[in-house]
Image (cartoon, rainbow, N blue to C red):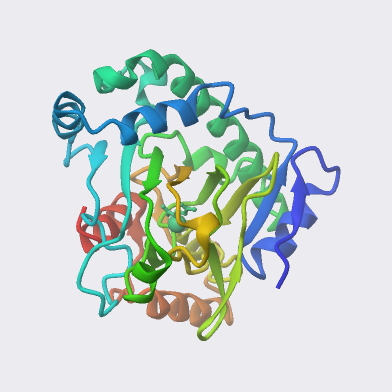
Length: 312
Ligand SMILES: O=C(O)CCC(=O)C(=O)O
Ligand SMILES: [Fe+2]
């Protein structure tokens, strides 16, 4: 399966995203006008994760806010695939940033990356801009009012996540550990910046995975569970994972940045239409996601239940 590349400036955006979202649920996005390098986001990540001084470790631990789901998550703390027989958590560490700073509620960043606060806020704003254009394209693709989804998204639960997968040998990978276990994303859509190292894979069938390597100038966009619920399974919130190094080039530190766009906490995740076969499709989606209640959940309920199941 090839992952298509779509230009945010395409005059045929709705049709192109429809094709991608109803097949793999993944696409590369170009012409998005976000320069993570210029905004200092990669430097912030490197300084945050590669600084192992006592002071830096203390600042990272102090930043943890479990209730607000912001701040640092340590190596092996999260297990994205709770059903996996692997005993240890994922071989990654991360830092969650809430875009609330844009709405006057500042999250205090650790001193070692405070100088990047403005650039990271700008990155949040750029991601929100791109997400809104995509949400409008999703609505048009489904023949809805263009603001149908955008009106349910005010970024209150969105998170920017700086992620670091520490160096690991190829032999370690053979022991069964994983950098990020198989999972689908919980929100409406995700924008993913990959720096240089490969490892991300999308599931294309039972035990079949396709690589989604970094592509210069492109973000990776994928559909999340909320969009899958609303479209009764037509848009695919596909399982994906990050595998352990398979060669020397992947054995180094891997950096990525994800922007998780979530529906407003009160938004109901129910299918747009329950008529005809949509009702059965909806039940099939719930079953696939391991959700037993047939009552629609809110965006907030789905997010907390998924975060809890992964150890966060
Ligand atoms: O780091 C990556 O490339 C993917 C991470 C991911 O899928 C996630 O954090 O949800
Ligand atoms: Fe993901």
